[in-house]
Length: 213
Image (tube, rainbow, N blue to C red; front, side):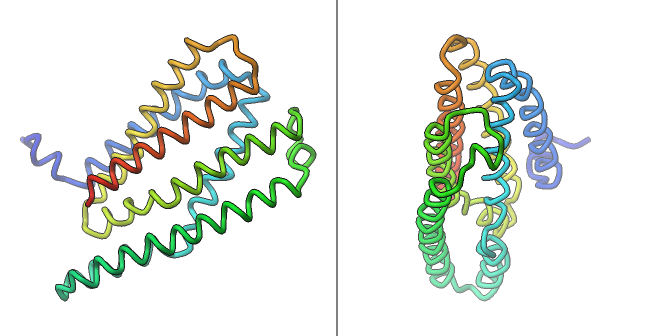
């Protein structure tokens, strides 16, 4: 019979467990957000969330390089080079995030997103909402580096654990927001969900980054 310590030490089983929690939390949050935002405006949130998640997957090869380079340096015992490589990765990620923030903000201002995506909200509000999400996206793009670091040292379960924690805390926050602020206008609701999601992601990513180091 497997003991708790053996199960907890099995990164494959624990990763699968955390994936299950993430999927469950995401699934449960959907009807809560639909009830809070309404069908049309929930679609706006999904559009924003999906766009930035897709961009986040494009890590410019930094994560994949970390996953292969650090084990190689560990094998040869080049600890100083590992530290230097991690620092250079964070620097590169920060530069990319700043450039991405400027580029996306300019794109949002130039493009008519209201017409492009058929969003039933004022153009000025759409621009401000996207910029808020762009800011959090860029900050979390930098802080997301820890996931590749955990994988590189064969502790990938913590990467999945952080995603599960993020989804679970967001679910609980969405329930709280739905309960305490049901009557605010739709603009404030979209801001509330965007800011809550951004702050939770940033807090979780920062906490796991500190834990790694």
